[in-house]
Amino acid sequence: MIIDFHTHAADLRLPGEMNREPVTLEKLINRLDEENIDKAVLMPVNVSPEICQAPLFFSPGSDILSQLEAAAGFSDRLILFGNLDPRMGCYGNLTKNQILKPPTTDFTPFLQRFKELGCVGIGEIVANLPVDDFRVINLFQQCGEWDMPVLFHCTGPGEGVYGLYDEVGLPRLEKLLVNAPNTIVVGHAPGFWSEISGDITPENKFIYPQGSIINEGSLQRLLREYPNLYADISAISGFNAISRDREYGVRFLTEFQNRLLFGTDVCFADEEGKMPHLSFLKNLLSTKQISRSIFNKITCDNALTIMKLL
Image 1 (cartoon, rainbow, N blue to C red):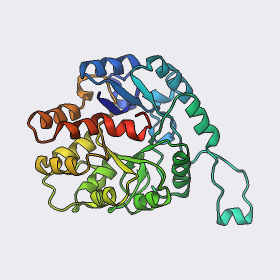
Image 2 (cartoon, rainbow, N blue to C red):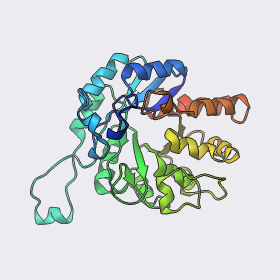
Image 3 (cartoon, rainbow, N blue to C red):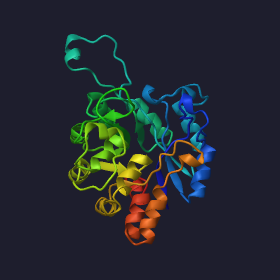
Image 4 (cartoon, rainbow, N blue to C red):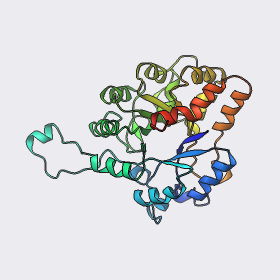
């Protein structure tokens, strides 16, 4: 079995790219069939304002419940995640003591409802907050209590983009891992994958660094030290990280075979939107650069394990 751990079905076009073809549930299933992918994890969108582009904002049925109910019609192919914004919850005016220690949101009603709807995880978290913001830690801790892994989009330092942000070295992610040890944390996107190399700059955390990987980055250290950290190889960021230095990429896939998850993060249904991840892994398998066991773990077994579906 092959599982695409990172998919969406929504109109993710920017106002200036209306010529692109949005992903519908039917088109998602068609792509899975074309690529011989058995199942996909569907992550609902339109939760955080940073990712809510104009076409999506005005799309009918773009609320979370509508997305999940529509996807339930494809239960033989789709595995459902819920989605939340760590900033949810409002307590009104704060007392003097609360100002010094702000209250945290109880996400129990949300998580319970997602479980009732068949969701087995939460993501993709895209709120533009520090990775170690107290609201982020609070959400991740509660997801762990409900045995729900959380996938987040990681970007470089600073505000103004989408995704949880961190500095070079991923110090904020380490703080999150320490404070939510019982939660499976799945990293993704440029701010995460750029850390595969030890020679990055703050500017490189927003892009796809090229060239050989001479010195290991913070990502490897965190994967070795924190068993609750997993890595989603989807999107250009993930593919770039494992393919920019093929020889090192094979070593990385081999060492961290138990912590990696195949995904695509296809955002458009046109030819340009297709991703090369599965072909790359199949090539490594056919040329015996990775074993069948490693291939199976990355494309299926690890996902089933963390979603408690084994």
